[in-house]
Length: 271
Image: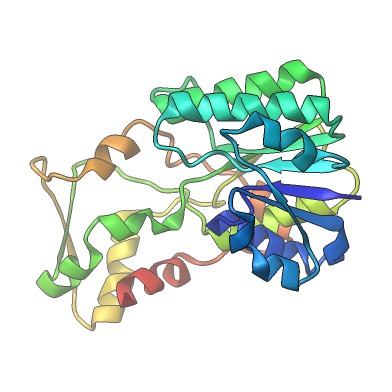
């Protein structure tokens, strides 16, 4: 079995390979990266490294050759038009390379798609389905580290976390937990073809719960205040995606509980 990981040098890709190495031998893993010169750590572990540039279709056919499984980690380009074109390049190349099983890191609970991330992932999923090749959609929840941009340190200093009004609930997960679940799917020979997994927390958390954790860390009460005048782009984004729906898919895949909210939050409070 040859497992090809595209975007292997990224944060999620690197974590997935780290977990895969605990389940399969290094010679079964192929790391596809845009800059092979930056992938010496993979080579040192006995992992084959191949050049793979989403913007250069000619690099992809050879990169995917011989793949039993190909994990397409969605592009991080800020322009969704570019991202969709890049994904189309990969899907076309995996057909040419006769990949046996295509796995894609999509987005959790896409629904009708109110904003471009939903449109992008739904379009990519549809394109994959039209190939007729066995697939697995790994629909990742919002990363827990989104909290880094809501002003945790300022809140601790002032004793108050200011948020945009709303009944906020979050199904977030860490990249580490996603890597555990995705590595499990990649390493297991059967049972995951033509399936969709919603990789979220099994229970949502609230800003009130976050404030309790912050209070414990700060050694003083941290209150929550809603302010409709708050200027933070993140709330516009959060308002247009499903942040609260949950699934136990991830915990079933990793065979145990995901990282607690407290353990997810503390690294960003301590920074």
